[in-house]
Image (cartoon, rainbow, N blue to C red):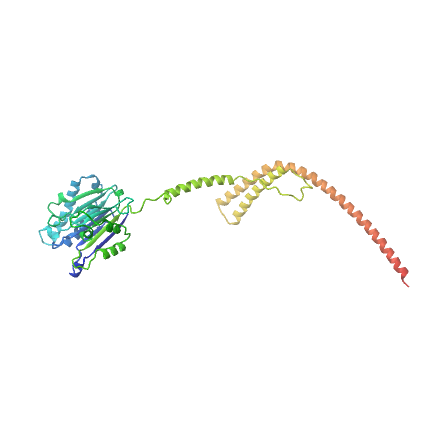
Length: 401
């Protein structure tokens, strides 16, 4: 929900140094809007418009139960609002020492947002337009047009017959993207003199505006004329469902659904990832001298890997400075993994150790034999070398003169 508003003094009042006779009230909760326009031939029309907009608007906004505008009949609502209007006009008459409420004649437009409805109140001229919540590019409708007499007289909010003339309309908020309340200074350029047709294309441009500055710029370029007779211009656009319905590709809930499916698939993949793959068969340089059972060795390798990984995790946790229960948890996990690995390894290790012991004994015997043989060969070489040196020396002595 968003509200745009503009309240401009017409050129005729600007040149005459007169204040704006239009008034706009928007409650703090943004659920009550009043737009009033003082009747031009009323001596205090501007004062009447200001007091009706703000004082009646405040009284409506302070109502404890606004469901009154949903459940009560149109006649009951007219009586209630007209009593508020007459109370304000009577107070103004007493304050300005005049006994004629027509001196403060003003139009009255109001929008009251309740939980399930939007209630529109309309007395006098001005207009209420709606932008229908459809896929059509232009869905502008005239919800309530000006209420003037055949001779052009305005049936103001203080008119004696107002209890029967005031319009009470209840709308479904989901039927509209936005609703516009405006005085005749804004609405007249769109309406023909008979009020039987209006410029939907230009109004559609006004409904597309997104902020007050854009609305002010629009009014300055389209409404304010060079003529000195231009009227005051006030408009409030109450945006309800201005955004288009989301498509499945951009819908937030659709994305959440897709993520949920992806999360489910990812969990399945993670479960598969938890399976420990079989170790790769790599050639061992000592396999020819010490053949071992490969299936037991593979199981041993896997179990030892689990234990090593668990120990590494615990050491890393300690090195990173993790404290409290986090460290205790990591230690417990590591110890559990080690204990489990040790239990699985005991049976395999005991069998392999016997085999290794026999093989190692054999290796020791082979190494011993190789050592003894090496020593014998070394002794023979030494004796041969000594004999050779003796012969050489003797030859040297004999050759000496």
